[in-house]
Length: 263
Image 1: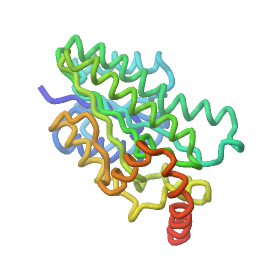
Image 2: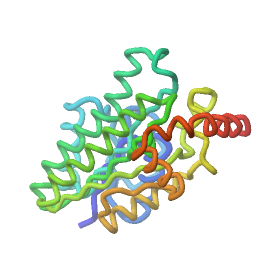
Image 3: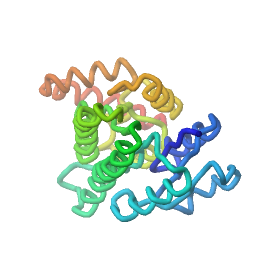
């Protein structure tokens, strides 16, 4: 029986690319996004091997209905990839309450609800793998995207905690923490000076870099994968010694602003 992978946030970017990669490798794929109309790229795929549905990850009943549809069609869920996320770039004093709530609900609540429901299915099955997409911003705080940072810290912490809980049931959890990736999410904030540090790396990661990390997680069942190595080391250092961030902030902002101009 083919492996079944359930992916959120598939309208574009990482989710779309992952969906196609899993499909091309012969998996059965559940392809979801809140923007259902943007999933029309699936029209050329073999319908027997995919399930394409609207999913608002903030909505428990939507999750429950779609999980049931998945079980009705494929009988199981082997892998859940919580990829859906949004990023608002601004300083905290400029943020709107509704934007804060939406970002927290999408980036964190969606991951928690999806993991909760899927874990119940996976425990009954006796196997499963939950892969949550966090960020290096979930290790080293980034000014200008403070709410995004908060949600990704929480996703990372949540992922590690439930990994401890679920291992005895043969259900594995991995958390992927990439640096900035060339996706619409990043494109949407490139015109804001508050997001400068996001662009301060040597290069913006390609979606395929994240894909490699996901397939590595599936193969190795590794708990945490950080990419790229050099920025991961810096992030871990700032995580251990937060005051170092004050030293890095100005030079990284300067570098980021220069790179935004080139973009």
